[in-house]
Picture 1: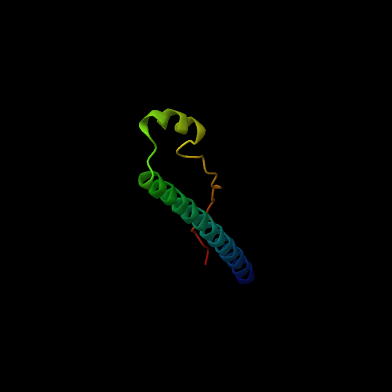
Picture 2: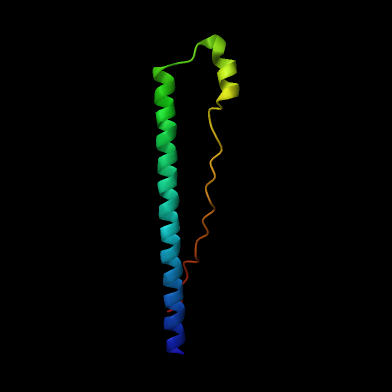
Length: 81
């Protein structure tokens, strides 16, 4: 019975480590995206578009693009000891 618990615990730890790695990579993607958006804002406010060209510019370059961030599923926090 004790050997099964150790095996189950090891599997749970492996799942947690995998999820931490997934979360870490997703956070890196979010950081990169936020840096790009910040650069866009800086450029926009340093070089504003003339008012008469605003409607055309918005059609050609939408302000925000949809970002695809994968859904991160977490392992249950309950461990049997």
